[in-house]
Amino acid sequence: MMHRLSKVFLSSLVASTLMVGPSVADDPLVVVSSGGVWLESAKANFVSCYEERTGEQPEVLTINSGEVINRLRANPDNPPIDVALLSEIDAIRAGEEGLLEKLSVEKVPNLADVPEVFREQWDNYATIQNFGAMIVLYNKEAIPEPPADWKTLIDQTIEGKYGDRVSFPAVTMAWGPMFTWFLTTLYDGNEDMVFEKYKEMLPNMANYWTSPVDAMNMFAAKEIDILVYWDGRAYAFAEENDWAGAYIPDPGAFQSAAMLAKVNNGSEKAWTYIDCVLSPEAQLGHSKMIKYPIVNSKVEYPEELAAVLTPLEAVRQPEFRSFMDKIPDWIERWNKEVR
Amino acid sequence: MSRRGSMRQGARGYLLTFPAFAFLAVFFVGPLIVNLFESFKDGEGGITFAQYARALGDAYYLEVLADTIGLSLVVTIASLVLGYPLALAIARSTGALKSFLIFLVVTPLLINVVVRTFGWMVIFGRSGFLNSILKFLELDTITLTGTWTGIAIAMVQVLLPFMVLSIASTLEGIDGELEDAATTLGATPLKTIIHVIFPLSLQGVITGTVLVFALSIGSFVTVMLMGTNSTMVLPLLVYQQLNLASDWPFAAALGNILIFVVLIATALQLGLSGRAARR
Image (tube, rainbow over all chains, first blue to last red; front, side):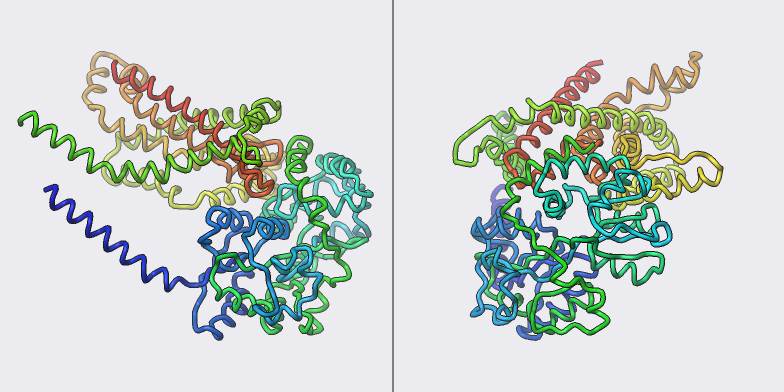
């Protein structure tokens, strides 16, 4: 009996070892995308280009930036991902930790058409793939004259002008720290003032949203009249619903971006995929589907698309290194004070 | 069987269980040990207790720990109160009715907890199903999203099947003739349940309560989606520290504190279980 069991055990061990060999060699390229329409766009524009060039189909993961960087940290020598899509701060951290490989025109020819401003803060470890801004989506029926600037919106929310029908992003949302940084620029860099404003707005806040799906659902159900949200989705919603309007309060908005990067020790095929993502055709197709601006300077937007895209001049790119080390303290402060 | 034969059989038994133990050791105990070491890191290769000092020395984190335990206790007790009658009904029913009741209990488990939580958000929303009915009846609307009550209701719905199934499986093992005997001797149905059935089902009750408590204390999706900063729980703090603050040592420390609480609850269960068995 023991002898038979040993034989079975050994055979299974050998068989599984043999199975590992060939499967490793044939592993597909693993890339990351956001979900929903972003995934559809990635498949239609980036994956199709990659398939055309290589005859292979990549595996597309829909996981968030935090998960991506944690997976890379857990296995840096044999990463489970080849092309990462990260938040701006995670991309800086990943680059500094040696988890990413620097982009170059030699490896990614289309990088030559991506202006420096979209990659210099990341020291070329990552490039912006597309960007957007946090703007205001509002109910035109309830608020015929929305506030012209951010500070007025904040002060009127505190005064209760809009009841408790306002929703801002929470600091604990992925882009919450960037939005907080942007608010500090409105108050001469005074973080204490910003947290004070967060606290004062709380009684008149329907919620500080952490789930973008929930936030949009609340607005669509007319449970809130003012929602600070991403421009692409906001403009798309306003286009489809006459009662909704979207605009950028003065003095503008902060740029929020999706960062594209090649993972260190990942497959060399990743360069082809990244070059596909940054190609003018794929970039324009992507912009048309997700309604966000892209970064290839050769792209010319059709008129109807240009009308709903936030121009680069209207957004301010956060100075990430000036506040990224403060994020843990901001989160702690948010949890303790704004409740 | 000879002594040598029984020893050989015992050794064979251990050998056969070795793969399962090895799997648990590598994939369960291993990460916990890594987590433990992570919690003592000071970022410069040294060892520090600073993360635990921060978690246990700050009134805010102690408050969150207390709220986490409190929520779990409320969810557990509510699950027991609601689950016991349902488990009794399942155990005492037969045929198609039994199958139907089990189907009702098990089906929610097939639906992802995120989807179920979104369902509760739709029901409890400002203009959700519940408030729509209240408005129709010309009653004041109520706010349940962002409150401990709303979160507890959603968590009970998520975890109730674990309580019901734990208790029902024990109740099915109780001889129905014991209830007949109690009735014959003059006991009312309620007295029968209190003095005969419940004591005999204590093992299942304890298993169910520990299972629900452990699951609820580690739950954060429902709290994250339905809650606010005023309804913070320790697992959600762990999530924030990992994904937003990138503070792995502190996240590890918070996680270990949570594990310690669950271990104490499990130890209590083993003690109570043993006492129940001796009776």
